[in-house]
Amino acid sequence: MPSYTAPVKDLQFVLHEVLKASASDISGYSELEPDFTAAVLEEAGKICSDVLAPLNAVGDKEGCSLENGVVRVPTGFKEAFDQVREGGWTGLDMPEEYGGQNMPYVLGTAVGEMFSASNQAFTMYQGLTHGAASAILAHGTDAQKETFLPKMVSCEWTGTMNLTEPHCGTDLGLMRTKAEPQDDGSFKLSGQKIFISSGEHEMADNIIHLVLAKIPGGPDGIKGVSLFIVPKFMVNEDGSLGARNGVSCGALEEKMGIHGNSTCVMNYDEATGYLLGTEHKGMRAMFTMMNEARIGVGMQGVAQAEAAYQNAVVYAKDRLQGRDVTGVKNPDGPADPLIVHPDVRRMLMDQKSFVEGARAFILWGSSLIDAAHRAGDKDADGLISLMTPVIKGFLTDVGYAMTVEAQQVYGGHGYIEEWGMSQFTRDARIAMIYEGANGVQALDLVGRKLAQDGGKHVMAFFEMVKNFCAEQKDVEGMEAFIEPLKKASKDLQAAGMFFMQNGMKNPNAALAGSTDFMHMMGHVCLGLMWARMARASLDAIASSPADAAFYETKLATGRYYMARRLPATALHLARIESGADTVMALSEDQF
View 1 (cartoon, rainbow, N blue to C red):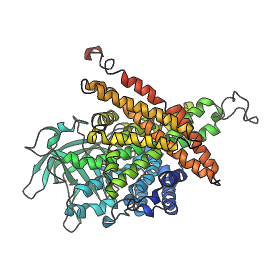
View 2: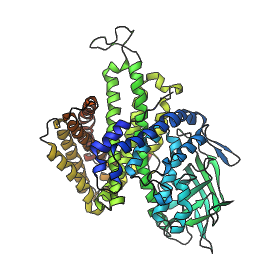
View 3: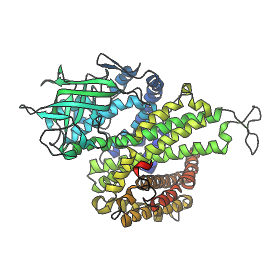
View 4: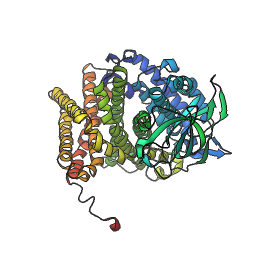
């Protein structure tokens, strides 16, 4: 069975030596002293390694079951959920007035990576609740917040998001779920939603569904969509639970992965709901939840890659196969370990350099969210808006690919279920699809985010990279990082220029290159993260630390990324500059 060890030291390195969290003037960051964050991360790591990770395979094998309208979760999930809830982990970064601990989002993200890596299907129950609570916090009335948030922050009640219907996925303007106004100000919702994660289960006293629906007489398409709070059980004025609402689970989806999470078909039969936010402005309210979810899904891609990588390293060191071509390394054994072979090293270095760079990227993005929300930093808000589709799309595309490489290290055993590696690949696959398929993320990046606020935020990013390179160009040891980063940034700017010159007269010229651009930008972001981590490592080595090997390893891993992964920007640029003609050349009947 695969194992998992929380990467506490690496998380600490990013938080304190790269981001220098406790020195920031963002509200709450002064509390993020190294000893404090270490204590939090180590305690979370114990739960992940000792409680959640052993249940990961259990959830995969058992899955969930639907019995007379009740969904049963896998063995051990309810007890583990109680333990997570009792530890206060579900409200780590939520407001104190609703029972949370009001820690910065960046710390919640660090903890969240460990939870997702140890058991993604399990962690989705609390993760979706967090997103639903955030939407109510941002758009709810005072009464709604008082009614729902304390129980949701504690996860006594869990939450969901209900968007997709059988006939509409990305194009939500086609939805048919209706919300009929009632005299008392409530609404009666009728319709069916599919692919609803955590839609029904036995681990919470109530489930609070956030449901997109159309109020009759409203505008056509997406402009006529509103968002509603629909509880599984009605809530009485004194906070106690009342009658069962008209919402039920009609079926469980049979899925490729995340078997331990109850993915439901939800039926709404004149279910009572309450408007969240403004009529016909449901997408604005839902996107509070969606943007948070997209960052979280990007984190899932990194988390699954980390867990898969950890196990691939162990296997590569233990498995004896073939001899090192440069000379025997294990003379007392019948063969050398797999890890001596260059192609196995390539796969492991791909994984290690991605995971560590992506971890820094996610935590930097989370610090931008904190700057925007806790310090009112509009520039940070614009920058994280630009980065969100990159975090979601690039990190899940590559994260999935890294789980495949980890599986490949095992050879035939990676294909055999008892070794557990296929679960990481199967669980990681969904992250490329839900919360907006990655092709849509790329379209959002190229079609909207690049031009947002007159292109201010992408220009600010280019300037950030340029200034960093200028500041570091004469620092000894940084040459291997600065020159590749400058080249990759120039490639990215050239791609942006191609879109500007060709996109207006031929939109397909831009859209056909959108996924390549998203990957280019992801590589540049990871290149910047590696350059920052390199500088932090060089500074640490200068003080002759006892753990110098950690920083030397960090530098070597970063040099690999800059030399072997970052040059992919040139390939993506060539594809973009080829335009749309070859992409669109065939007529429909030629396929």
